[in-house]
Image (cartoon, rainbow, N blue to C red; front, side, top):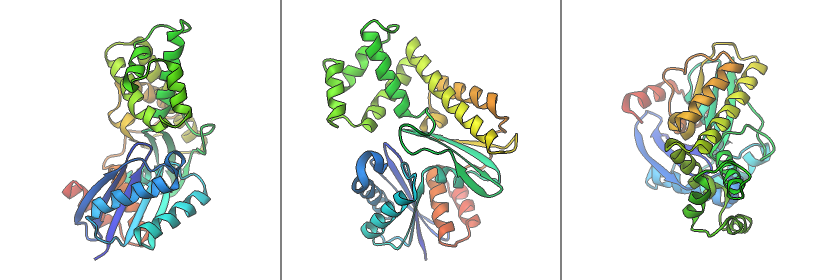
Length: 315
């Protein structure tokens, strides 16, 4: 029996799914963030270890497919792969960017995928070959993730507090969330890493969504702006890469799957403006399931039976 583990790791949490090669579910696990650019290599490796251990109940894994945010260069793969192989005691550890999990979860030879959680990512598979929109740091890659929403929300709140932007309830609510007296204190907390960026995104983006739902005009505008930017980047990229018009586009991540309506609708409008996307592909799986299929493929196993088992058993 071969024990497979798929790991979907991002800027706020890490999920793992363990199954046998015959399709029997062994368990699921969850841990904190595993983007090494935010929490360091040691922090990322430990988060993956915790999630894998919880999913397998301590049972040794044979193959682990870790699809992690922040894995943007070959040296990132080597660094994390080496650390995970040593920490997990498993030679069969394979590391890729987290968008690979979404691609593996989306059926079809030619498809686009867009993911939006703490960060945002865009990729496609054309005639079986994968490519993705370059994202190496804050200066590259698409805008539109929770981190971008939180950054813009804080900026707008500070401007509004000084009368330089329209008033918004974000001004007082952001300070209340972190228990801080003013925005100077917030700036000091972020500079000293007492308040890391992923933690700001974790609290401020949902707050922005909440206030938008309550009718705060500025919060709604922020969500629409970020959704539109991501949709525009994705649509332009798909068109530029020659993805056939009408190709299905899978949507992943908390913001696109179940996020605020303002955000999702703005994303959809912008995407369609630049690319004639087909309907979301039927039979799409969850990203952590895609990560497990990635692990199986790297192990040279057939994935068809695993996919059927996932759908049949709701893994």
